[in-house]
Amino acid sequence: MNHKFRYPIPTQPGYHIPDRLHAPRGKPLKQGHKQLMKAIIFDCDGVLVNSETLTAIAYKRVYARHGLTIAPKAFSAMLGMKQTDILANLRGEEGGLLPAEASGELTEEILSLLGQKVRHTPGLTTFMDRLDLPYCVASSSDVPRIRLSLATAGILDRFDGRIFSSSMVANGKPAPDLFLLAAERLGVDPGDCVVFEDSVAGVTAAVAAGMTPIGYIGGEHLPRGHDSKLRAAGAREIIQDWHAAESFLKRGIRS
Figure (spheres, helix red, strand yellow):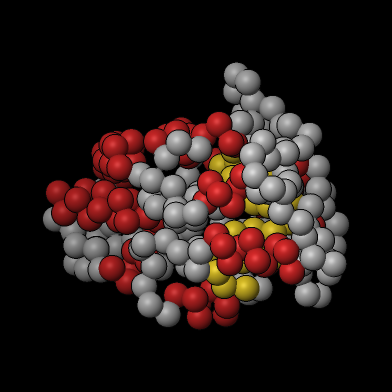
């Protein structure tokens, strides 16, 4: 199905969409002879960068200051969602929600940890060096947080002008809006996009957008059995590392 959506994009200095990104280093990764993909969409948190553990620490600290305790399972169920949606649904074990006025406090705590400690996932840059496809990042985080994470991890320059946030669309993941926006701005059909995601919400959004979701479980934050949840949500394949992602692209997509 051909999705055509138009969304207003916030004006940012230097914000543009390159026609195509050709990897400057390494041997180009050639695809197999089955269905070929034309673009790659990366989630940010837990896929490009190992940020989810740091984010969980920030949530626990701030909730604790307000007398609330977060159950690990409750937080993991919110993976992939934007902060406003998490705060509207994540209750402490005591049954209470974080006060609305504490949202800024939470944001500051998250940014402080990310700015000091976040790193890209192992093997990512080698994988990206060999890509000969346009790619972008589409995340539930807001643009400043995405840029901070990518910059701290040393990969911001790889995504110049191709950073998409749930703040740019009406509905965040698991709705397809964000991924449809990314495909439109890259100039490709949604059906020709592969999405690397670590969350059920993200995989669900990719399926709804008519894309091919790949479940990435190489992040340090994921509980055992998470791969089964991603498959149940519609992940076409599960990968543990970026070497496996390279193998998948070489094989091509089985229809």
